[in-house]
Image: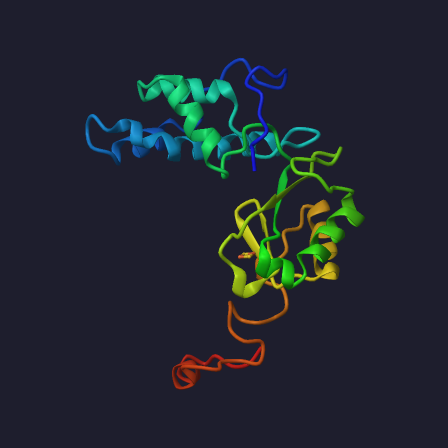
Length: 220
Ligand code: FES
């Protein structure tokens, strides 16, 4: 899906400077001399996290995203053309290039999640907070919806990634509960939402049973 962004939009700040300069130095030092440009991805990630921390204090709140001024600053720090930084940021889906809500709901709707009920998850989001289109954000700044392809948790389908965390084995009702908790800034426990352990069968171990027994793992 094509990412939505506008480098000249009015919401773009005029300037950006890293708050955590020590982390910037540590990241750059991970790469051999002359290859510092390799730090572009972790620095973009750092931008997004710093913007999210500041954005959480705003009213309405704003989630993590990468402003153009930050990309220009990275280009300056790494001595590379700004266009190269724009290319990386616009290519990878984990970088948000326009402001998003405090909680970014990335709903997987690829086949396994779809077969297991991602339509119900999407409906729960629409019924509870009225979001149905990609990059749509609630007026209170709390939520942005994004429909995504497989996030690699198909054994626990259907699932949603909320900011950094996976919420799996979802149902319509559980998704509604999660949204209501987040509206109060209560973070529900991540992982499977139906009580099972990780991706184990709901009725307990069905293979490596001896080892599971030794580890004290039983049916949920
Ligand atoms: S299909 Fe949804 S995580 Fe793989």
